[in-house]
Image (cartoon, rainbow, N blue to C red; front, side, top):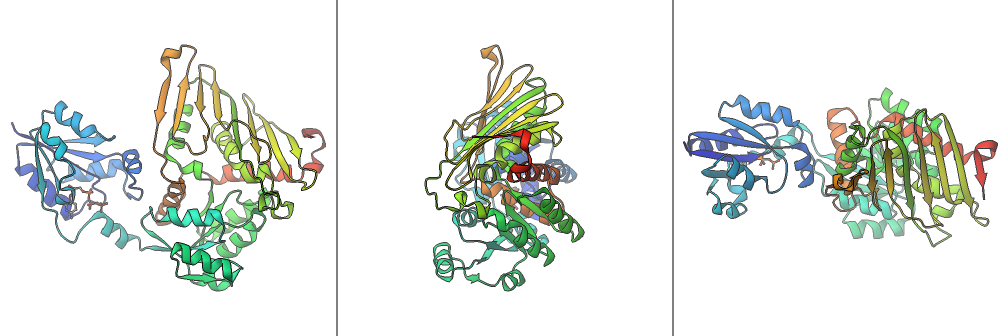
Length: 453
Ligand code: CTP
């Protein structure tokens, strides 16, 4: 029996795929089709596949051409599949000519001519026209965001809103953007969705206006500085059937998702303690981060990250919250803050600093072991699961490409196309983080649960 194998994503199965499968089948007597898993697609930078793995497998099966459907999960799997299934011929479309010649040492390699004028990308574009995104603000993060958006299909950042014409001109020139606006209403009329990257204290007003104008919003963290304001924004978004995302990039990174799933699987027993730290020394004391009127300070600047991992694993209902903080005498912002959260059956510490440096790792402790994510854990690409018996240590690696903003952008665009948010950062989790920040901002009224040094 001659065995043939082929691979693909097979998203939105089309006649190009069917032509390929028919010809591959004719090369032998038994056809094996490898369908890429979601995580494998993400790891190779294919971020906008629209159908689930199960749906894509079902579609391939429904052609009646495959004798066996398998899942392709990792780079290098083709070699082991060829050996495992005693494959005689590897077949793939001509868009891959040369790419798989290395498999010739294991079997025959055939490149079949690709069917013209059809692809999943084309079908996705037809189903979901390109989304026109405008960026609010022209600072450092806005710049990085625009560069990262180029890795996500289905979205085009077309313009920027700001106040300073000279800065806007330089910004547009360096990023090859066509248009800038200094009038927010005008800007909103010309975009489908907005990304808000302004100082924290301005998020609420700019998000609210965009939502009221019917635009989907991706807002930098922290989404607002109070739970009430965050709740108001989510209410408007829900009433107007709009997608509102808080841009905590870690939440959408594939390795972080894996970390949370593994921690929740019980592998380290019951989770009892989380200790997560993020410090970033800011030397310029005249910067936004040291400006109290713009919502500056360690907790507003960095608190979202450790609070994210804590709320994902321990929930949104701590029994007690207390703070220890060190305030800069001159600027009146916190240069380091620790938030202690006491839950029914667990406790956690979030430590952040813009004026004091500390190792930035995250340790999740359980009754049977612990997970350590080394610094910079918020750019999650690696973690270790450790036990009393060191021989049982597991190391998990995953890609975190570029600045990692591409994952949140892709998730946001998918959510708009599907009309619903993912589980990766829920409204309740954002509301919880806003609440912790708000309580700290109003620290004078805390009396007992705050210690200021
Ligand atoms: N294929 C083909 N003709 C097409 C499209 C795809 O022969 N018009 C082949 C590919 O060469 C590959 C298989 O079908 O061997 C699965 O390809 P896949 O990447 O899933 O499909 P595309 O439509 O190319 O997807 P995308 O646009 O997302 O790259």
